[in-house]
Length: 228
Image 1 (cartoon, helix red, strand yellow):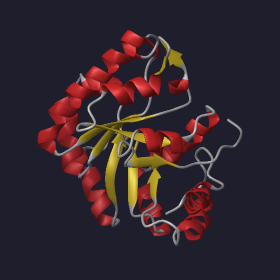
Image 2 (tube, helix red, strand yellow):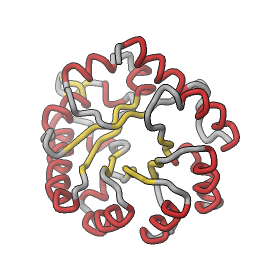
Image 3 (cartoon, helix red, strand yellow):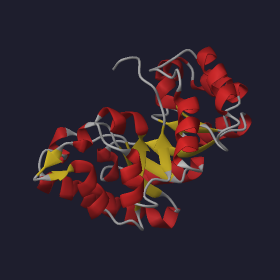
Image 4 (cartoon, helix red, strand yellow):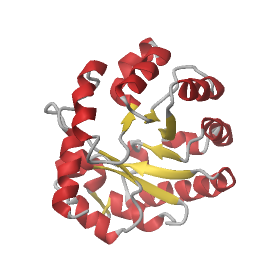
């Protein structure tokens, strides 16, 4: 796929997606982009209000729209076995989920057990607390935490990943936060989920990162903004 085709496909996928839209608004999005991409998954943080009301109904309606994959951002007090059964019932799979940074050191093996039961392949840190990114040394420690957690996850065949916002394109100690994470995490263990909206908002070029860090971005977020 060349650059123009890639951008066209991403544009079709992301057009019109804003924070927490009604599920009905996603129908035209899916039908307009299905011919361009092999797999279109949905980040369930987008539907967090619906998930808080009913996980069961939300997953059912997402599946009825034609989605086959979902990325969780919380299970709303449902245990892993219940989540796995809901996915199976609705013909869905969940290759990834978001977890906070603290999870990598507090209850990590319990989280890995649950993710393995659900069938997930990535656990993604979606953002960093200020204390984990406010200096070069802090970012380096964060990278080491990810490396250690990813090493622990190997027997589960699960990988750790990191999802960016725009703040990771600011500098600490003369280096971009995201670059430090990319350079100081082990490519054999840690992946990245590039958010194309946030990297663009930060004024950086996703193609530059794809070129400089090949095979580090198996996951991509595509979305539009309502002005945020």
